[in-house]
Length: 234
Image: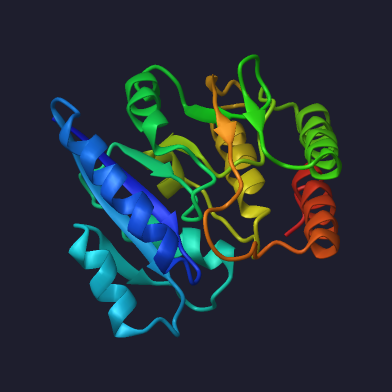
């Protein structure tokens, strides 16, 4: 029996979770010899109704700690993953990631260290406008070249990792740049010989609500994180 944990950071995403969680549950029931646990990481101001909503779809609500940042959401989620879990999959709650790719990610994960649901390989695509798409491609290319990462879509949060690798690294980034930090530190953990596979996928616009990413701070934090990772600065 293969054990997989799905960690979903969710910040005021109830309407989106009503779509995402039933679909993940439906997909999970079709997986042979695979046990899935779903962890939805909520902010500390979440109402009981949101926690009950998560539970009603067979997922476990977790309150992020100590802050409501995206970085703390992932750290909190990883800390609560079952000790039996062999793989940990991360996916956004806003509907931008296609849950139908979950079986492919899980199947391929046995043979790789990181499997990526990628916008930037042949067959991949995104609904982002031209400006965002261009900036994203540039940032990913800079990270790829400077840190020596064999991946075209480093910045997506839709990936699957070996749980033991996540438990072995120390994550300190506060915001969305933790996604790149995870990738690079696993790369270092594997003596820079990380086995990576990218599955082409489509990145959609969110279903409901507004993005939590602010373009200016987003770019600055990514560049600062790049410098810190490159020169091993904490």
